[in-house]
Image 1: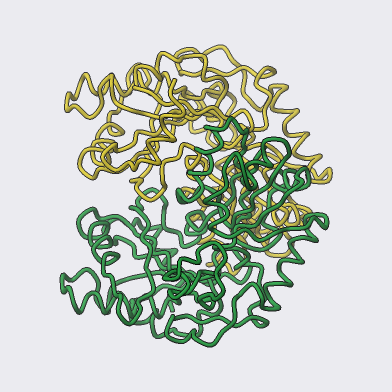
Image 2: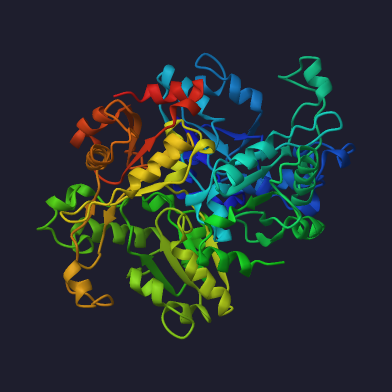
Length: 308
Length: 308
């Protein structure tokens, strides 16, 4: 049996009792490394950057003491069970004849995923492979960022598709997120959740160029896009495309560390939220741009209560 | 402190460790009655109906043995703490001078809500009242039906607003859900989650007419709209409005008991899903109508794997 276990929004206590039982019944426990442990890390013990440009000299997140301690805390919470970090490659390549899917044919295997395991379709492919090979699976859902957005007071009912904002690099500045926002906000009058890019244990471009996907030797340092950087990128896209999707006075709501006890929600214009800068604190950050025409009085009350 | 604690999708083991700690630290524990305990109930011990027309002779859900046992199981899971059922009215009327919000000024109070506490804006109003009266609160998120929909393989990214399908009565057959579906599916090419009506411990129309909102003497029997009834209502709306939003061959995915170990997902045409009838089993049911133009190959693979 393969258990796909959602860990919720990040602290080790956000697991459900059902998730805990699945872990305790498993002989192999893997933690998906892509977004792993962000919420459990004590950021005062770990270094990270909020834009790719600042990130050149850092070491990989999973070798930092904050990360290692978070993993130990997670393991202790789960009854001392040993947890192995799985690479994205390992998850994408496992099949019924090799890797953890092969193990799942005979024993219980738990794959831990931060948030909800099926928020995106990243892990759907895994379930399709299980079905084809007649491997039983169970999905143990948990809260994702979409649930935490409810804390802004904005109803989930009027959201359009979520949009990922990728880190700009010197030579790669894709503006498709701006066009998607236009579609949601202007054409469809729907609220938008902007998910800000993160880079955790991804091979450097050099490694990819050498074809070392499975076992790379160098990694991009841990980088988590801040609300400030996201808004700067939005403004840059606006200044180039000039279709008036956002302006300095566009209303937005920022969320730092969604679902944690240190969660910070603040609302204001995009300029105000950008200038809030370091006050947002440690990762993860997300941004909501509401379609103001769709907000009801109660939603306005709540948004105003978070004014900077 | 007021804790708004999400219980997840229904069994007593879907609570998070953080939610459990909040409950154990509270001197008053309330369970929101509107959607409460649906998932924990052993339906072989409780009677319910799947359409309002069938429901006339049943007793209120919270007096049935299946419900009482589920409440006992919940209480045992939480360390034997006593749990009081709160009416919708009680939750909506509590303020800083009376009711549980008044208690929350000095002691910890946990309000338990099935799913995620802020999936809809039902409880946002409560947070606005807390902020105005400077009562501290914490939201403990959990999985909602929106998370469980991920198990169909359809990405959350291309969903439009969710739509509630209300029970038709003899004299009240509102078709607005059909128009909302048209907006999502036809105009915006977005997937739609249809949330099917439930009636649990709501006063009868006679009670409402007499103004007995606070302490009514008779209740509407427990009724949970089935996928069959929802599709019949969709077909009726189509036959009256005739704008071709749905037809007998429209692709849909049904979900019964989302997130539970007895979860059932099946895909097919609306006619096939309607004719699946009693095979869907006990509540809750939900229905997804995907915008087929937006589905990728992987999503098709997964949907096909659930074919009736």
